[in-house]
Length: 364
Figure 1 (spheres, helix red, strand yellow):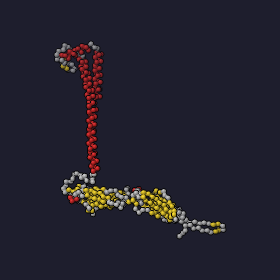
Figure 2 (cartoon, rainbow, N blue to C red):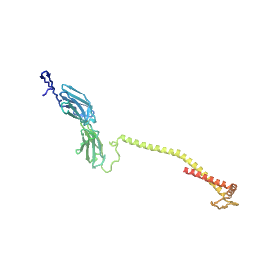
Figure 3 (spheres, one colour):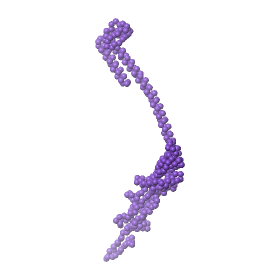
Figure 4 (cartoon, rainbow, N blue to C red):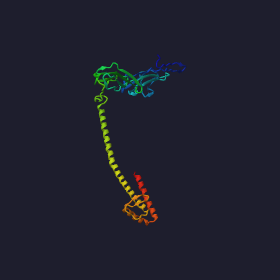
């Protein structure tokens, strides 16, 4: 075995020469816990014996270099890292490299971190209401556990021996999905009993359990009322449903009241205004029609009027004696005016008709 350093002296005339031999370090070793639970405080120590010069120890987490310190005591060089185990550390590789530049490549030792992760609470699915002798399938599922948990199912203290258990590793969650399923035909003797699923894992002091109560009828008439004790509908869910229905009905009532108020306040006011406006326009139309009739009568020569005399012109109309007399006086008055005034009067009537018709169109 070579010593750490070999010194040789020899003399050649008046010169002395000192020779040194470099020694590689020993293989590294990593110590750490054999089982690591989630949120545990983990300490990993890397050590290497000997080496001249003393080696440098480097820690890597995957491809990431970690910042650490090292000490050398009695020829042993050590370096330690500490961390709180999280799901990000699960299945990670920690590597310790030892090098003092004597060897061509550094010496390497790795530590594989496997966390023991408890699974999520199990879930059971299957029919709750059956006819006696009718087969049903019930499946119990456990997820996010590492290592894979074990599953068993029973009813009234009797285990199902024909349970089918399937375990699958999920790469995205770095955990196991485990299902246990049974196919079974209950009878009326099982009415009201509970199918129980138990999940066991090394991190659990007591098994995780979940149950499903079944109702079995002798006839083909299934129950349509969900019992309040059924695990599919809790008291909190029932209260939430009832409150939601009440709120919806109140909302409909408020909307109906608001709509009625708008119709009474706004609709009635607008209707009254529209009726008044329409009546005013109809009155204007009646005045224009009467003026047109008065004007038209001036274009004809009216002879001695008699009662119920019929005047034949382009608008056939039967007038009484009083009406004829009124029109005669109007004719005499207009007879004195010039032809230009007749034309002006007709233009004014036509203009008034256009204004009223335009107003009527905008109202409609």
